[in-house]
Length: 305
Image: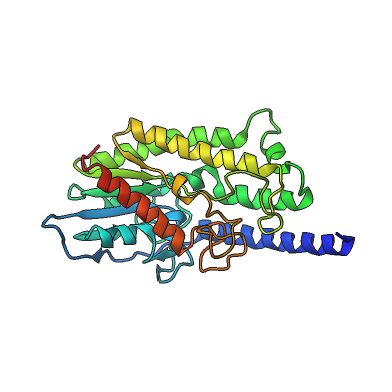
């Protein structure tokens, strides 16, 4: 590769990193507006009051049709698909881009705390949270910026482990009690509800060294970032099991559809999305895949716990 080519690729990757940092930060800073709960006809002769809590992986930023600009919420996100398929009697989706566990109790922009949507009448709660507590947006922007400077090394891993401890592993551990606290609060507000915790889908190739410069992470950082996401999902699974809820694995069903794949095959968009979605977020097919995983879990066991 000539130096000119390499310089051009580096410049393109830097632009992608800048775009991604801005887009992810934008998702995190976005203010929220309240969307009315959509009512669905009751089916199967039973009543189902469904409340969806979560962050941008739940809300579906960029995916048509956006029904709440403040929270970047789509009516094609996985809770909407689940509500339609389960014929929910009432459906309240308060997921919001940028939400952390704090937003369960605190207003986000003009939106009420997410837990306000959960009541004694609630039959089903889905929760997908924790990525922003760990610092998902900052991590991606940082690793993209460092990756451009050292494409064949592992600058991101070196940066996050410079203190002698893995800062991201520590962030996952610190988030665990916050997830437990949210689940206890959900149970307190909706004692009879079935509660499902939805894990995060496969963002990066499940093996190999990635796809620089399409995704401008250094070759040596792919394994580290992949392991970090798996650590987050394992934490969610563990905390779920200890708090009378059910875990929905979305990682396994999305392997092979990560952001390095061709546009026709990927369910997670890369840093420069080709389909309507936020950078490093699920597209409509990714939301559909997560919905299918939730529906399989709901069909597999009708008990509350």
